Image (cartoon, rainbow, N blue to C red; front, side):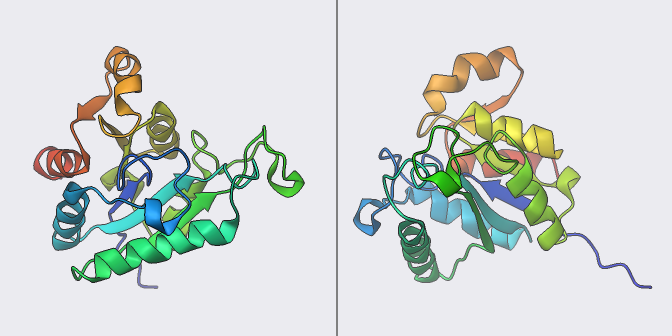
Length: 191
């Protein structure tokens, strides 16, 4: 039996990391991608990383928007990236929220960050070696999910990042300015 070589991956939170945080980004016209995102994804692709979005979308459970809105935003992001010959390998999103009003999504689950479910599912689906992979997030829930899954988490100061710096410093979490700085750090120091 021939074992297939495992992939390395960069898991990216969406709102506040890839794009500007605008309180539940769910309309295509609200999607504003950071310039650093394009450079970061190009660098990741050049270095052979799978690029995977891992995002909580609890606004669906809360009734703020629908799953097709999440899909539309991801489709628009794909178009913006494709215009620069870039791509996301996969999107994993959690529609659940324990405080939701939409019954089928109003629950605790194993996929909503800080639970590692989305990362673990991506690792299984895409044959990923978590020990050579990392997560970039703007909340401690992103970092906790990566730690719970067995990969490094890097907090960025964009999005909600500034709100979590004190907690991250106390826990010895790596903090970088933005997605591009986080990617460069991992490539230069952890590969």
